[in-house]
Amino acid sequence: MCELVAKYDAKTVKDVPADLFIKAFAAHLKAQGQMEVPKWAEYIKTGTQRELAPYDDDYLYIRAAAIARRIYIRPNIGVGALRKIFGMKSNSGVCRTHFTLGAGKINRFLLQQLEKMGFIAQSDAMKGGRIITSLGRQTLDTVAVQAAKAAKPAVEEEAQPAEEEAQE
Image (cartoon, rainbow, N blue to C red; front, side):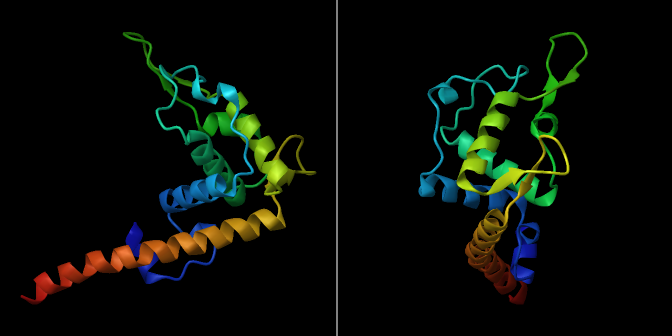
């Protein structure tokens, strides 16, 4: 997947693999320091189907980055759609598994935080849906280009030993 980054110059979020962008934007949000981390964040599960709270202390930043990317790619989504996106199958022991929605409070809280930072805004087209603002689009594209540039040298270093082995 990183081979795509090496071949093309990334200009937008859509040009960068999701995992690279989400890690880079989560680090950007954490470094910026504008996002409030509530007291309940270390105790809450991300859905009823989960057994434990996330182990990663920075899961709110990662989830916020994933939400921002989703809204960039598919505008006019709200809390309900995000609950479906971040849902999973519930393990009911010997019973059949069923799909269960993810927690809504986390998604709603992160949408409100992203709105407060000016990256997203409520959509006029849909009640409750969110769209990316011009500041949000500019910031996300800038972080995407930086993430692609940071990934490019790593991909080129991996390719050089393979070329040397092929020549021998």
